[in-house]
Amino acid sequence: MLTLAHLQQRRSRRWLFGLTLLLLVTLLISLCAGEQWIPPGEWLSAKGQLFIWQIRLPRTLAVLLVGAALALSGAIMQALFENPLAEPGLLGVSNGAGVGLIAAVLLGKGVLPGWALGLCAIFGALLITFILLRFARRHLSTSRLLLAGVALGIICSALMTWQSTSPPLLTCVS
Image 1 (cartoon, one colour):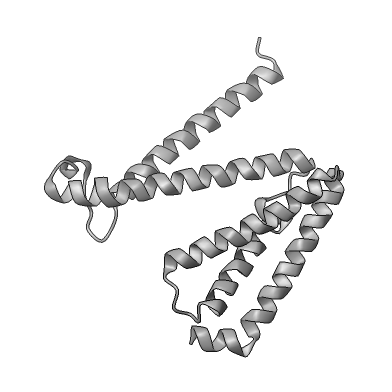
Image 2: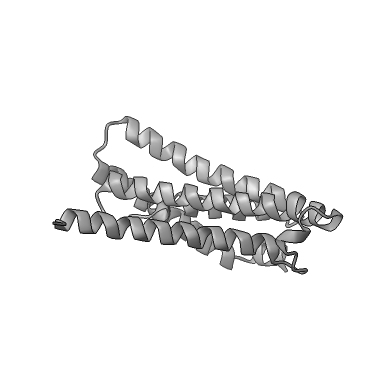
């Protein structure tokens, strides 16, 4: 006789199998789809070597890894704060990246290449993370750390709003 726990475990396995199958189909479509559709039979041709192995596969793997990292960070946040609504932007790290990006646009007078803008956004996120780690080393409780992160996020959000509506940024972008 099947118990409720066995039924739930069986349902969980079905969901996991279905989602894994959906992921594989989506990955296959992402490798085939583009400006030109390249079916799997043409992946070893010269055109397939260039588009699939040099462009689409690295892009698809990067997207897969970034998505997995975001999912993992969300699960860690939910476990750490014991809140199923917690998400990676909760501590203000995302807003710190936005401040880093806006600072790069302002200081670079709008002429920095895209990779430099992304790097500045990463540095902004790392700065907020470093500040939060300093708070955490003071043995703050998780609720106080959460409050500090939310406060940093609000400060960064206010800075982004202020800078995005100020004339210097508008002249750099336009």
